[in-house]
Length: 284
Image (tube, one colour):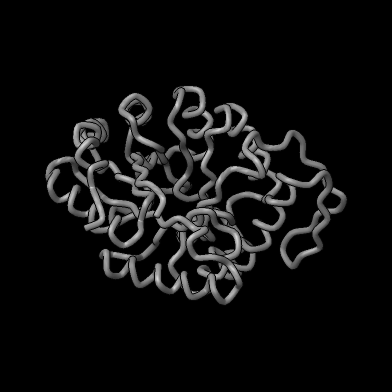
């Protein structure tokens, strides 16, 4: 099994630039393996769409400039928000800004309110669009010319230079939970992030289904690392250590502590204090 890697997340929603920078600094200096934001254009959750939200990929460029060693990414990019050539170019730019530290997180997108209020198309065919977008981006990152005459996207002898620092391209993390999306994960992902698994048992069942789909498409299930997010308020360290250990037992070797507000830096600092104990989590 791959080694346990741990990250922090401040989504970029209902926070401040100072709060974001604090979490990035704690992740970079505190020994975490990665740090994350999210990709939404309006706020999500029970409090509605009107809370402030910063744009996720602009923040990634800032993380690249503000940190030195920690890897980072967007958990996860909404594919429908950008044309794949724009997203591919953004990813290459951030990869170069950071000296090759980008983790490329992506998903099919799901927030209906955003698509309705902004007139964004594609949610009805989001899985097919994601599949085609990944084909295009991987080709743009790795081939001198890209031609693709798809259902949703069309490229004709397209160039994309420079290429990413990371070869063949930054690691692809795909957030997914449904059956159709698991087939996309099996074909394209380096890391799968469990979406919709409210308990270790539910996440484990999703992981088992991914194993099955990988075998169906002829891919070794062990080639895809498994990731999970933990919502944490920074107060019950024993609970966090237990959750990390339980998920590690189930094969989730990429684990992200989502720092719940309003004081994101306090939660990140508490996670940093717990990091030696978290890294001591073991498979019993």
